Image 1 (tube, rainbow, N blue to C red):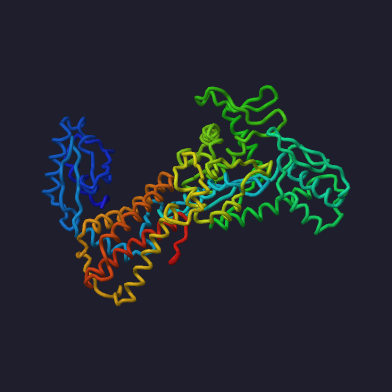
Image 2 (image 1 turned 45 degrees about the horizontal axis):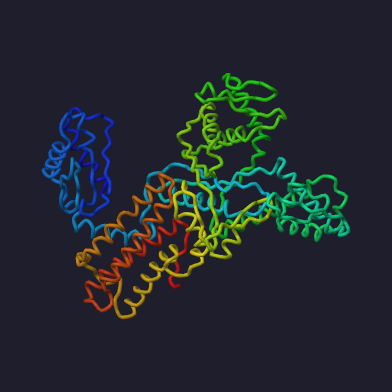
Length: 564
């Protein structure tokens, strides 16, 4: 309908000489149903160009639209409201045709062609293989996967990519941690010492265990596997490499298993080291030098960002010769562009917010279009149990792993809770609510709505109603029925808006509204016990609602059971 009205309004506006050539007609769904089904404020936006009062322009445009005329099987009324809004009311015939369209489209209803012919890459999770995925990683993972789902629903060919680094100091410490545990298992008589944290927590570790070593039980498990495989054969190893490699392999295996529990499957894994092996990182520095945007000072290499409008220059390569995080990130983004992606989405935690512009400055200097990069910054997660925060710390092993969370509340609940708030909002994950098995739990509320519909349709068919019967959808005249139909028709634009804004919570909100409207419909409009014609029409409306709930929950990565 938006496309149709945009075309009709644009044709009317073509008769005016003073309207800018780039003027865009915008149509929005009013917050209140008594304001119509769609509205435009174009009369108010054109007032200064046409040098007329907005209300006068709105009245002129409305009359011209009525005189065209607009198709009566689509639009029932066009009205001027307030200071110059033009409101459109859909005809019932249009609603019934579109309702049938939902039923005909089935599992494809809601798909659009916004990104048709375009390729997108969504980079997410990207945790280095130093330990299991935690609750903090979970929000990143679910956001990234759902954004990828949304982009696929609007037509993009999407690649899901995991970026990681298996080198550097943190990996050396990981190897040393496993090595110390291995030596202690092979030689139980080796001495121990006690590490004390700032909060007073103590941990007994082998004497050779690094002060900042990884303390989780998974380190002991990896060491035990090495004992099973090699016995005492690794006791004389001087380097930590074999232990680091074993840890990386074991941890990545667990990471992939965890992601699969969340219905997440990566298409590609990109190792940061490849950027050094291909010399891509150092090529970036040389290109900056060629443009007089990199220089040496105090033993380091600096990015001359003051020439780009920033307050101070930034270090690209430290005195030690080690690049700062900015440099490989710039090279990585250049690699993404060179692979031919039309849209690049990065999912970052709030701790990255200060560095995003620095990396994008580099991308632009390298000659790429930074506007094709969308960075989604999400706020962190706080686990709450009985009103008390559950503390997390990766290295100290006092964290809650993503697997432990799913063990407690299930994968569907985990996904939904990570999605039900805007990414830029701090998320307080209420474990007590997440464990609630009733309608207070928002994901169960949606699934219960889906299950209720499945149950109604089964019972209706058991007593003799059939979907094969000819149906007159025009029998759906109750105000609740009309309201439900109109809301179902908003699904495609809801998905598209959510995809364009990278905001999955918009779909979650919308589905809750659908479920609430259906419960009202179910309370006020019986199916079983009604005359066959109206009962069959209501069965169709229930099926259309079920379709929208299923498709929406599918985008969110949440299951739709027939029974609960």
